[in-house]
View (tube, rainbow, N blue to C red):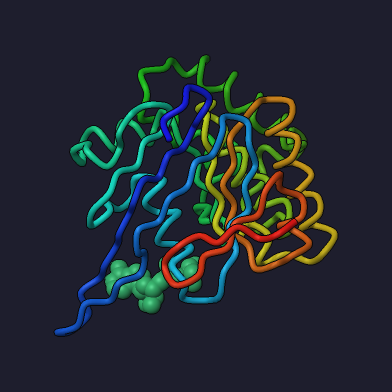
Amino acid sequence: MSSSDSCVEVHDVHKSFKRGGEVLDVLNGLNLAVKQGEFVALMGPSGSGKTTLLNLIAGLDKPTTGTISVRGEEISMMSEGQLASWRTRSLGFVFQFYHLLPVLTAFRNVELPLLLLPLSGAQRRTQVTTALDIVGLSDRMWHRPGQLSGGQQQRVGIARAIVTDPALIVADEPTGDLDAKSADEILNLLVELKSSMNKTIVMVTHDPRAAERADRIVHLDKGRLVVQAP
Ligand SMILES: Nc1ncnc2c1ncn2[C@@H]1O[C@H](COP(=O)(O)OP(=O)(O)O)[C@@H](O)[C@H]1O
Ligand SMILES: [Mg+2]
């Protein structure tokens, strides 16, 4: 299944958790290939393993067996140190509840991932203002999260995810805490990142209307992906 235009390749991945004396098999031989510039929505019942899969693709956890490659690099083989460096350069993560630091302004929140890279203050400033401009928040740069609406906070979250210009963005229920109008704005932004910047996006969602904005919808069921009939 290796092909040159693939961004994410998940091959025969099993993931088990030990809980008490029991072993819980969450993913059971899961396969997924996502092309560069593709926007995939991942759906499935609560507890079906969506976040588990997203965390594996993001290199935040490792498969029990099986392999995961992103842009030809096998992240499931990397050490913790290699993974941390890979995540900083190659991945943006968008959370349901934004995960912004409340004491920092939008600018400083978006700047955080850049502090791990060897950049000058001027370079950081250029990248942060570019990212905030892309999400339409140039005029809210010096606001703190508490001074922003939920939709605006999520746009700051997206700016933080794209500030290092990663090829891959993963989003775990990014519209789950938003009203319909703000959710639409976030989805418009994700579609725009995909179509004008060729970002690859894997988004978990419960909302069929959100999922419809993706190029493709995959469903998690019993630890495997089932492709929905069109
Ligand atoms: N770190 C963990 N330790 C033990 N069990 C876990 C852990 N992470 C997730 N699980 C379990 O794995 C299953 C899938 O969880 P999750 O991936 O969060 O589901 P979803 O995001 O689809 O709701 C659940 O039964 C959950 O309790
Ligand atoms: Mg989840």
